[in-house]
Length: 345
Image (cartoon, rainbow, N blue to C red; front, side):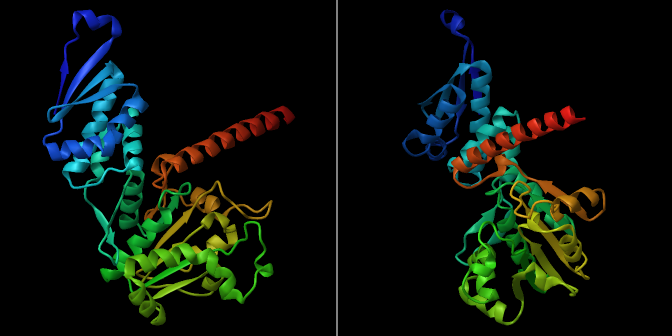
């Protein structure tokens, strides 16, 4: 796939390494290069190397570690392309990130593995190693906590897994719920009845199900009670059997609400609880039920927690940078608070 050239004696002072990378075919090369050379330009810019097209392959020139890292990026991308996968900006950025960490081989784990198919025939697959770990955990366990920042696909992948289980007759019903916690506006000030008021909080769940089932099938399943979407308060006092149950935005549950939800599970059911612990909208002084549950349920067989990070963000590439900026700010604030607490002691 690649060949490292010996340094020319006249070039030794530049400390450059040249690597010949073969793409295998012109079709693969075109996809590897990207439209208007955008892929090789991005790799060159991010890693500080020079990438040029030569014949049916690439030549990478630069400092030894950087050139090797770039070659690992192209190895990972070529594996995806050879398997018929597409390479977009977010996937390219992710592959560069993995290669920098010396973990580029992990990108090959993402080849294949269809989670669900939309009503229009689009295949849904994991786009990051963190997402794959999350989906695998859902398959293997009865209760899974999926924690991570916005854009990591926590909710959408859980809904995909639920639809796949329903279509495969592993469960008889899909139940999706969220705590109706205000983030600025009070529900009581909004017009309409209770259902109208909580619908905006449940909209992401409606959208995902409609995409996967198609509008007509979605409406039929709702009318038959095989899909249920409701605020968390509606779960109280029930036993939920033979169902795939998703609790979304779980960081906004209290300890009492989380205990109530977890103890609703009946025979033949599976639960996925998702949330972002950096976006808690509970009143001051209230501890998040998600954080509490994760801390006390460690080590119980059949329960697994998967934590995704900014690396697993699959929205616009800027979202990853935005999440990281907030993470850095939160880290600084926590350090200041630690110093203040230690000073008071």
